[in-house]
Image (cartoon, rainbow, N blue to C red; front, side, top):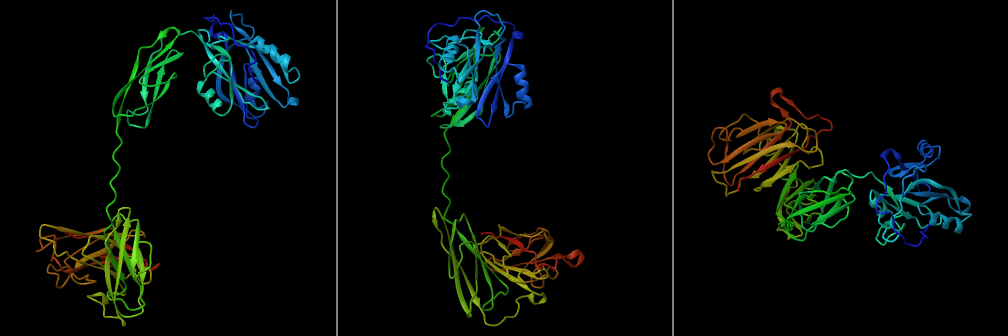
Amino acid sequence: MRNWIAAGGLASVVACMPASADMIDAVEFYNASLDHYFVTAFPDEIAKLDTGVLVGWQRTNLSFKVLEATDTTPGAAAVCRFYGVPAAGLDSHFYSASAAECDAVKQKFPSAWLLESANVFQVYLPNLTTGQCPANTIPVYRSWNHRTDSNHRYTTNTSVHDAMVAKGYIAEGYGTSGRPVAMCSPVLPSATPPVCTLAASSPTAMIGTSVSLTASCSGTPTSYSWTGCTSTTAICTASSSSAGTINYTVIAANTAGPSAPASVQVTWSAPPPPPLPDPIPICNLIVSAQNQTPIVNSLVVLEAACSVPTAYHWTNCISSTNICKVRSSVAGLQTYSVAASNASGTGAPAVANVNWVATTPSPVGLCGQFPSTLYTEVGTSTVTAHTLYNEPPAFAWNGVWAVRFTVPPTANASQTGLLDVAEFGSPATFREITLSPTACDFRANDASGNNGPLARSNGNTATITFGIGASTPGLPGLTPGANYYLNVRNYYPGGNSITCPSSPGRCDASAYIGLPR
């Protein structure tokens, strides 16, 4: 329903205030199925709405103060209430504190809107030209849903009113501001000016972003004045286009006067520079097979270990990931390579040469003493290899994993390296590892490496540290350019027992080969 009353006349400059005991709450309810709002100050209606006697209504937890219908406070205006009958496509209530508007509704819509009462409670009228409420009152805003099932919402909350207008409701009332005022709700006069504190949602922010400033004030302020930020409410959204520290201030006022300024500082900074692009990937190629020289038609797994890759490009092997599986039907030397790329470009290819043989060769080193061996070749680079071989026996529960690496020829006596073995994709398994020039070497340690491993370790995670050159107590020395094996088995020396169950028959591991450069 629209406001039919022409603007004109002045509200009282100051409303004569009753005692707080004479004020009652007009409580708001919402019916989701109707999408209607309803406000009432009658205790019996409030009780029926709260208890579900009138079905479908829930409190919005909003209300505003009004005076009893029998109140005799000078200047107060009686509020009429109309009911829109369902036969007219309605089922809603309408309130007005203007006697002229109440009369206009009776005259224009006698069969659609039925007058329930000319005085359900009392409030004050604003200035009909400016919309300003008398002192000791606050505005009540009215919005209309602009639908055939005509429904109005009444609120003193500016944020709620603005949200309804944003949804398409039409603001109704008096005044020329963006929020016309329908009526004025009484409030008790403040005995003292407000006391405020000001808080920022963040003391620091980047330029171009925003920070919420919130004033917390006593004394029910009726206005707010900001410095450094633009707002007329207790909340202001601040931003800055330049770096530096800015001091924001708010002064709130009520009928007793203004507060002392409350301030808060926000330090604005320039956003960080964009991250540097990732370097072009560098790759190393890890080769795993069931034999150190694989038999034709057997499986060889190629694992690319690359820095910051987004794509892989294989040659002589088909894959789009860092893992490529290959077989050869003919004996002889085959070359495989992989290059990785990212937004910065494509790196140089990593190359592996695999010599396929026609008949099963003799096991290398001491590997013939074990039911099976998985061989992995990592070259001269620091990498982490995995037992990704997926054909049995792979790294079998009772087998050995022999990882061959080459000490970089440039390594020197001031450097050290690290070998570390841990579980991979399976429950943690206790393991024994050795460092030896011989594959599958689990003999007693020999400092020379001729008749046993140079070092050993065991545990769920097992680690061996080594140096370059001559061995020292507790630190075996390796020769630059020489080949060595990191040998791994699922074994507990203290109990002379295998630690991996025979079913499903494998306990996968990862091996970090940290080589000096």
